[in-house]
Amino acid sequence: MNEVGPVLVFGLFVMLVVAGIVYSFVAAKKRREELGTLAMRLGLAFSSEHDRELPARFHFLDRLAQGSNRYAYNVLSGNLAGDSVLAFDYHYETHSTNSKGRRQTHHHHFSFFILLLPVNFPELTMAREGVLSKMAQAFGFDDIDFESHEFSRKFCVRSTNKKFAYDVCHPRFMEYLLANDDLSVEFEGPALAIGFSSCLKAPEIENNLRRLREVRSFLPNYLLARPNHV
Image (cartoon, rainbow, N blue to C red; front, side, top):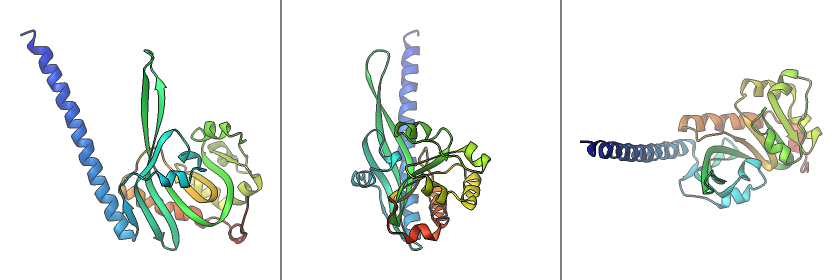
């Protein structure tokens, strides 16, 4: 009887692991189908394949320059109401060593959105304090303060060009970010991007494509009229 107990425990453990794997597989398949349906409804192309060229193309964006084994997948792309957009899941790996000296691999996945602009902008990142602060410090950027104390307290804003940061972060846009404080926004080159810490559900993908275009709408016309800001 004593020998049966450990066998039953091990068998239950194996069943739970298998059930978890099956559930994850089914959930991922269902989400891919929902994203494909969303893309079709919005008139966008969809690909679930691993795309390593996309992160190489946008390697200058901080969120896409982390770790190794980088690739995009579940990519929605095309023209949405006159804007060229990309929405995709993103993967990268980091590594650590445990107490026994064994190398461990950590997989990171999150949703990311890009809108292509007709001009090139200098780097500008905006996020809640703590999300991008350490990353930006590694690149030597100082936090920029604004007249709105609430905005300066809640958001970490860094840029290679302070004038550009002040032009973008006008009062109306600061109010928008305070009302949408889960957004992490990045400008650089022709890309306007927003990113998240996890992979979003299909309805959230659609909602954030809308918010991506809303962020674009707050850009002053005079910034878009100049051919180059870098």
